[in-house]
Amino acid sequence: MTTKAYRYYVRSPDGRAIFGFDSEAVAGAVAIESGAGAAVVDTLAQAYAPMVQEVRIVDGEPQLAIAPIGGWDTGKFGVDRDLIEAVKRGRADIVHAFLAKGADAKACDPKGGSALHWAAARGEETVAQLLLAHGADVTATDRSGRSALLVAEGRGKSAVAALLRSRGARSAAR
Image (cartoon, rainbow, N blue to C red):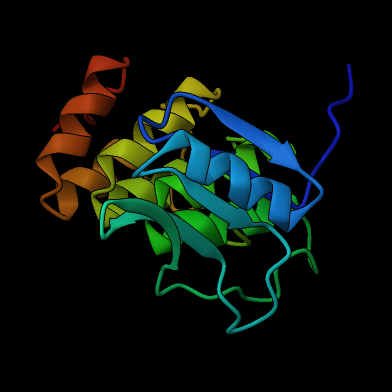
């Protein structure tokens, strides 16, 4: 089954749901209706252009506010590369949007580092949970033979390391 890829994605305030739209105006209206904490992600944002708008309450009313994160060459090199870039930025809403758009949670960078490796390196527990929920391989290794768990342990990211262990990752024998 093929899923339609949209440009704009609205992530619910609790992060449990994500919906795609072709129209920025419609996506914005849905986000505002969803309430504070909802986000609109533009998965084709130009370099340095705003990529995320967040719903905030201003004077008692929900409004969209631009988050301080811009696009890159988004859409130019494929959705899997965009997922890796989103993980590097540590934003679960952007990661969720690219997963909804069809990115592979097992995507790797040119050196074999998976999206999960990047989440582990940054200590992004919420992003790691999202990747795992979408099928990321907790046992995958990069070209140097390092697992995401080894990366998390090496960088002192104990919460992510504990998450990975709870999903079956094992430390290398010493």
